[in-house]
Image (cartoon, rainbow, N blue to C red; front, side, top):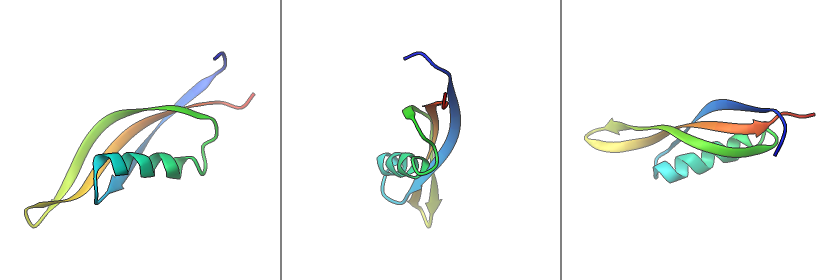
Length: 68
């Protein structure tokens, strides 16, 4: 796995779950970032509205290989 890699931070959100927020963030990033190889969950948090959880938020570091 030799090469040069870069990491970027992205944030995904979902009204359903942390897992769904993660999946949606990676899915969306895949539209513009090529050669993604891994992700790391950096932070999980959420929003509260009227006393209930209204949004799940996940900050991810995504690693990808740079083009040759």
